[in-house]
Length: 313
Image 1: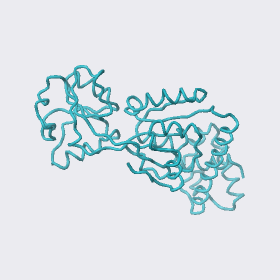
Image 2 (image 1 turned 30 degrees about the vertical axis):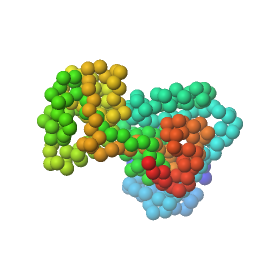
Image 3 (image 1 turned 90 degrees about the vertical axis):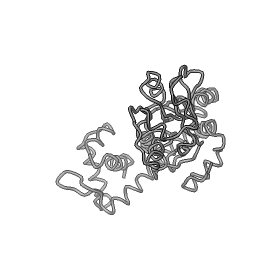
Image 4 (image 1 turned 90 degrees about the horizontal axis):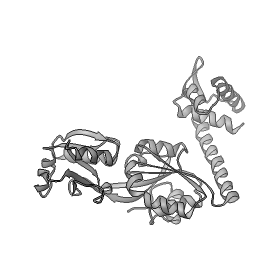
């Protein structure tokens, strides 16, 4: 039995039983993978995958057990590499941080600056994506730490910890009539074209629910993936913006006025995620604590050992 064989069967499962895609992901050939899967099945004395001709069509009952164990073995093999590298190389290495645009643009710059100052020999890479992409990157081991508001807590493969709560703001061009409507109401907002996040992003589900509760359909004129784009189109007069309050920057948002909308929409929770069972290095803990001082090594370890979200804001 070889680790490479275990990687093959796990990747086949991840790729929806598509051997060609698994081969492409692992930079090998389809016949080579098929041969190694058959050798592994012969060694174990069981069929891992159900077949129709040469195609894999499902996972057998014993195959599900084998795949679960294979995933654990591969995680521990990766942990062994991470731990040995930490002890052998000291404070050097590579840390991949995945975050949404709002977090990367508004919440993380000071954290990244301080982390780089503390760990100049660690190569820090930042990937930006949707919450679902971020979750999948962390699950696949392509990112070490994920930060987002949506989606992370929907993946059982991840340990998630709450970082902070935030609310939405409504942004309008200076002089817009809605600035005279105080207190701001959902019915008033519904009268105007709105520009807000794509459905997968930054608290959009809470915006939708707020209008549903009063039986009103908002006029969503435009959606975007990040707050800066929303601000740009608000400044052009295409509608009112609904963005995370984290993204309000009075010094840079010239010509725009931000109105607190915390009373209109439910608060949101930014979460930090790491893959379940992952060995965290010293500088992983350091970045986590820089971003969320309440998430000490002890708190993170308790969550990892407990298997769930132990810390509550």
